[in-house]
Image (cartoon, rainbow, N blue to C red; front, side, top):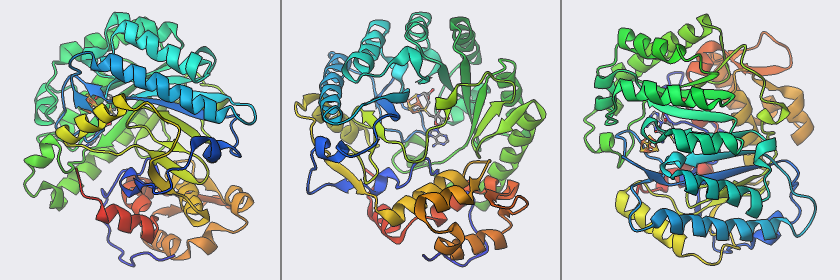
Length: 447
Ligand SMILES: C[S@@+](CC[C@H](N)C(=O)[O-])C[C@H]1O[C@@H](n2cnc3c(N)ncnc32)[C@H](O)[C@@H]1O
Ligand code: SF4
């Protein structure tokens, strides 16, 4: 397994929240039936994800799979299709062995774009069609300030949501405008008040650093404003400017500019130190959790090997050997076409787009997902699963990380990033991609 030998590496290459990345997925020639894919998979601790691809606005930085608005009853047709897909998946899962969901999430886009009765229906689909017991398991929901209305939040709280994640991005209005996410601070604060009022056990706030015009002082303003709400979790995202997004279309040379990297690294360290000084623990480069936040129960952490059921046109599903979804786009016209095709689909019993994950890819995935956590990876855990040591399988890469000062070897038996390694998570992850995944991602044409 090879790696580039350079000791210099750009810190912001890509956010590796899942491996292989979705841009490495291709149409599946064999279109395997779901019933065959899931027949021999463990199904007693599954994750459930429902994707809602609608937003009120298209933010300048955002390349998520979503569209602005939902004309002519589109949300209703989308929920009809979700209902059909949930039924088909449940049937495929239920053919052999017990099925249980250990956690659930509604993501987007913006799930709270749906109105209160539509959110009721979404919960009904998750419960009655898919079989998830939403009130008994952790349920996380994403929201934007404008859509976090009292009636929608009340439905989510009543149906068992345990975590509400609000995309704030910045409390500074000029920065929100610069990110093409215009919003008034008063509206953000009011949304946070409504969320606290609704009583979710966990509030998460998303903030972005590296926005044009953002300074250490304005970053401190956003961090302090967020902490007045004592959120149980805070995510700090470095800004990425990606092709076909609003910012991407107008980008000059910013993405090739090393001073932007330095700005982001500086603001990252400031944000991390601020949160650590205010009673937060670092979980990963982006995620911080309040040390005294109530525990979320044993299901809080998804096990490396558990399967994922994704429903909706932008959701991924994972078995141990195949990751699959539907086609993916950022461009508005293509996104709309994919959503329209999804809502017209009657037959959801096959996987159509994805990537097979073989033994070597499973090792890479395990290493990436564990190493990018601040807690690191117990080497013994890897050895139990694969029968080898990471130092045998990834010698070149790990030597390179060590030479860059990215590993902390102070605890025997633990493979863990140093603080600088964690700061460079978005370079560590891509370094561990296989040649096949790299080639597929390089061949992907943004659309
Ligand atoms: C699904 S969105 C959050 C929910 C909701 N749609 C909203 O925007 O309020 C997930 C989060 O990813 C982060 N994000 C998305 N694209 C990003 C980018 N290009 N650079 C940095 N952060 C990004 C934002 O912080 C955003 O809140
Ligand atoms: S950041 Fe959130 S609200 Fe903005 S376009 Fe992306 S998903 Fe929609």
